[in-house]
Length: 296
Ligand SMILES: [Zn+2]
Image (cartoon, rainbow, N blue to C red; front, side, top):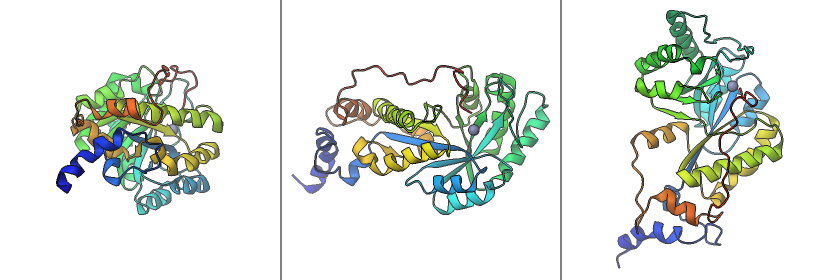
């Protein structure tokens, strides 16, 4: 057997053994691993917390509130470190919590919504996409979402991540209607700010990625969240997942067909049966109870 033919068989061979085996996975196989994406929201308020967040290893994505004291400087730092930068677009919440500058509210006209969105985008450098800050009121409003998504679609080259701060959100459906590449948040890491809870949510994220092939989490630059991520992110190989930017996850979702493995089946299914955690036998609650504690 030639070396090329052997190389073609390697992914199937490696996947047939536990990832906990002593032999580390070969680099070629890592490209086929289930993927996780991680957005750190609410960037731009605190400089030390933002810097510590940007120091996290790997393809973490950082979401900056517009017009905040440290937003531009930290976004430039993130970009200089090859990190992805997105706009954290403030939108009105159901409990009318303070939104800060650059917010879109239900009192605005279509022209005001568009002007605010454009102004916010101009306020954060290197933006490749947008996710919503709060928004439990606005994201369930189809007309406002149409105004926002039509404009994002017309600007072009921007994705939208629905943070899902309410189970009634129509944001990502409306994004799709206007041809805006989109994803929705699967896991909030730090609704409960204890390291134990955050670690449990991170493990849920990994389990969901291995079940479906991809999963996206949102966290914040809290000391507890950063401490957990500093422990987990250097060890993703052991968990059998790969961290990717949101851009990469969006493009995989929008263009990539399921990866067929040697011997039939889809890559995600193979890994679910043979990944480090073994068979998934316990049903896990992946979705937050709606509005239990607005994770904004
Ligand atoms: Zn936020």
